[in-house]
Structure formats: C-alpha cells, structure tokens
Length: 85
Image (cartoon, rainbow, N blue to C red; front, side, top):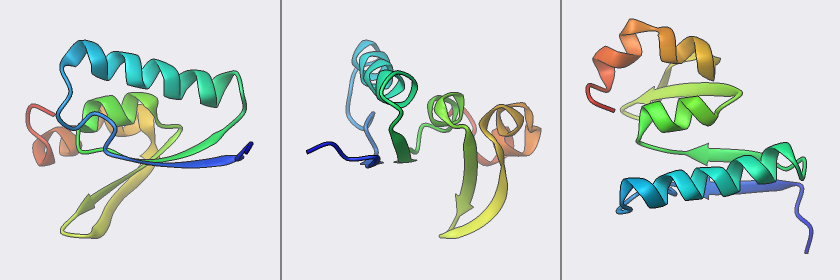
C-alpha cells in the first residue's frame, strides 16, 4: 500500500521525550521526503504545532483558532490555553 494521506492520532502519548522526537522525525520524513499528507491529532501543542503546516486549536471539541503552525506557536493565547504544552 502507498497511501497519500496518513491519519495519526496522538503519536506521542505515553512516550519518553527521546522517543517522541524519533516519532516526529519519522513523520517529518514521510511528509518532506515522501510527499505524504499527514492529518495529526496531538495534545502536545508545542510538538504538534512545530510539525504542522496548518494548525487548528480545539477547545471542548470546537475550533477556536486556525492558522499556520508557526503563527499559532507565537500566539500567546495558545500558550494560555495549553500551559506547559
């Protein structure tokens, strides 16, 4: 199988930080080098937004913000919603 789109749900959950980095390296390789589109759900907001081209911030199941991953990382409101994450 050679899917064009991958749906990835919480790839970092329960992992040690060094393994989280490895998982995101694999995802980045799939995105950058193999041209895969990746739809990612991740509660680690910082890690998810560092990876994202486009990000959506959900609160209680509703989209409250949408922008590029980089812009959302710089947005202080995101930091307020996800302290430490």
